[in-house]
Image (cartoon, rainbow, N blue to C red; front, side, top):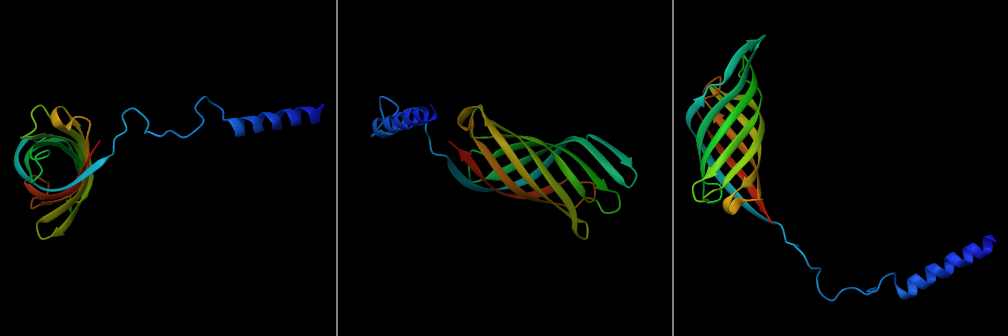
Length: 184
């Protein structure tokens, strides 16, 4: 009985191997139909320049730290790429050491490009702020954003930014950004 089962399985596999398992067992001559698109990336650089504080948020002292929550800042985001050239609203949070001004920071942002009607980038950022000189602090941050509306609908950008501030608790700054836009 076992030999009969093995022989039946072997014959069935042989038939499928030689004849194929479907009505169309050969490779297609044309590409598959549907939405197959190549992912494209475009590199960019930008400069972020502080404009104004829209909301200082909540600051409180906890031990040797200043905790900042919900600070909202408006800045200019200037680039040669029209898809990201515009006004950025940044909401920031952080825990900064009272003695050094150093610590982790993070938040969200929305960037409205001037030349993309109906479009807005919405994203988040994370970083760490370190003292880098006399009355100078540098934050290295990573940004990720999704495009919504207009010509940026459904695309993303990824960037790294180095932000230099000359104030112990943040405030005015200038940032140099390099990244890429990933579109489909």
